[in-house]
Image 1 (cartoon, rainbow, N blue to C red):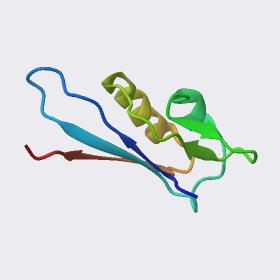
Image 2 (image 1 turned 90 degrees about the vertical axis):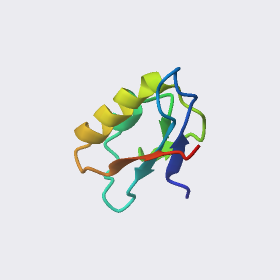
Image 3 (image 1 turned 135 degrees about the vertical axis):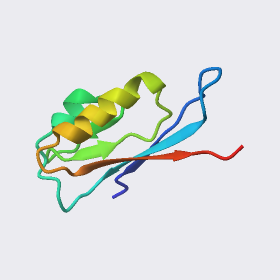
Length: 87
């Protein structure tokens, strides 16, 4: 099961290019489903209620929602990693 989705989009003029990765720790996740409620554009739930990332480019407007989902996760199973792209 792939539990990693890449969150990317084009930066606005004057903003640095970034790449954020959303990772779900399947060991920590208890399937509460809050993350999929907060970011349905990026996560869906499987038959047992565990989040399944949807591999898609996501607009910057969702970055704050992804961060909120990570902070509100009851088991802290969501990790958002941001990296600056070179160039």
